Image (cartoon, rainbow, N blue to C red):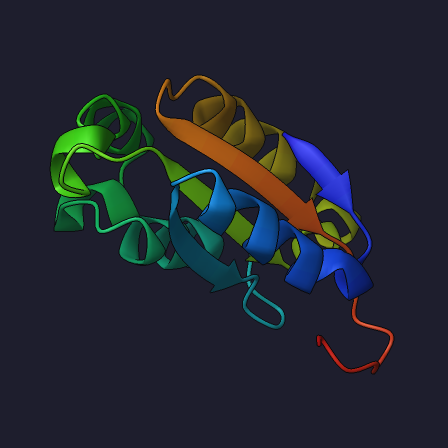
Length: 119
């Protein structure tokens, strides 16, 4: 997992696009905990529905990530990732461990937005 300030989102997008990765973006839901964030991550990664509510299903589905993205590796750009870590460190750790174990996935965790333009 790569951790960057929110202002570096554009740099991360450009880097992974040039490298041929498919891009998936997600934002930690405001006030959301483990399950809400898990559901958002699963949706952004195009995982089957059970992966949005079951951690084992998420880990299993991530093994097939390349198939879900037409053979491409995926870069997940996770905005406001630090919000979950601040609210529920255990939830952050669980999801980060599952995502880190995926072979065809690069995760970029972006901090809180400073209100600056992404460009």
